[in-house]
Image 1: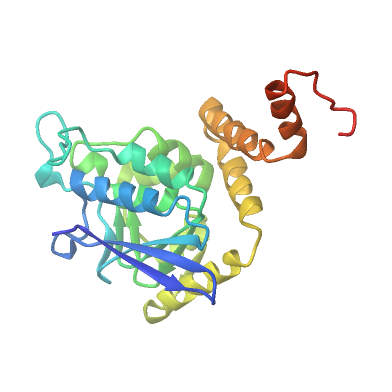
Image 2: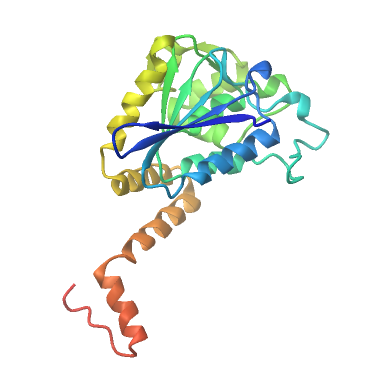
Length: 263
């Protein structure tokens, strides 16, 4: 049985949103290694789909967005995937979200705790229901995230608030999360799905290339050489489609000197 739910949603006659939901409600949508693998595959499935402009990441229940890794699955050396036999690919999932060409909207209902809180943090925009509860949980279960979970949190809500979340593991309400800058919107639970589609529709009307490069550039500042390398790689790909780049390639094939004077 799949641990996620996938759905395509029409935004207008041509454009769509792709909704992905974690589907382990009996475990508060905590994830296993297989859940992570399925999420990564789902994101990659639509990477080059021109009709899909936005990804909406949510959950199958109103009680929890996600409570992170399922502690019951964790062994003495961490988590293992039953499909590929490797350790849990959660970092790859975070990177997939942050460097996916489509903006990702997190729709948070109920608990966003531990890795679930970091998951929404890695998304581009977060729409939280008014029943949402946020918090870190690592020190309570012998775990921590010193990467995005700490560094990106500092950049998002500031050093003092980030320390408060990690060093106390205190839960905060959706209202507090909004005031701290941890989420973008808080709306009534029965309106959160409709509201997220409204945001998706606004994004879908914009230039997809502009949106992609703005997303990459905004993330690159916080991701050091990795971020700038990814950004540069994508700009090179864009340059290849220009007449200037085509002249260089054509000159090489025709064994002549390129003429860049007209550019």
